[in-house]
View 1 (cartoon, rainbow, N blue to C red):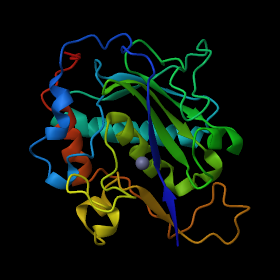
View 2 (cartoon, rainbow, N blue to C red; view 1 turned 90 degrees about the horizontal axis):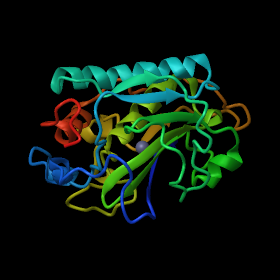
View 3 (cartoon, protein in one colour; view 1 turned 180 degrees about the horizontal axis):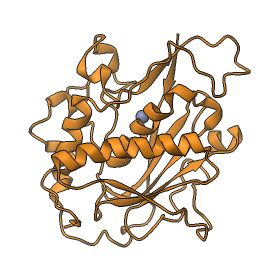
Length: 268
Ligand SMILES: [Zn+2]
């Protein structure tokens, strides 16, 4: 049995001051980690939220195969359905790929100087072409996808999602993008993979099968069926590949905590 790690990575912007759009006053959202409706062991499972007018634009790399673009669009609609019903607005909308951005993707794991997708907090889902490029971002062949978030002074300044297709199993594309969009919204994993146990962020090893954190979309790994050879795993699907195509209570509760009380257009 193999587990596919679903990455997220943060980098701190070197600039002392945040970029455009970050000049608002203290946000209620900065207190997100104090979300009282969260269990204590989830209090550190939140990252800085998106502070911009919703919906924000998401640009899909036109070099992504059609079925991957469709899966991404589907995953956005799942998050939008949740937001529409619980918050009264939608998180994401598809925006046209802006080909005029020159430096539109990070070059290495510490690169937070890539172009923002737009003046709001829109972001891009881009295709990583080579394993070398993927490694330079800090990921390994076992990672199919990752969200890179840049922050300054505790606030999100820009972000992007990278997809490494050779490691993405066809049947798991929706599950993977749904998970990455959760990171983009500011959800860290439902449990901490390497933790030895922290009362504010529970270790995954302490969670039994079937636990709400285990079945969450934001659990750090997806199970895949055994591969009969490492050479031809690209795009393959096994019936025992784990699929998570719904938001679970843990995902919804944490997203609600981050965004409740926010009105549309409110970066206040
Ligand atoms: Zn992840």
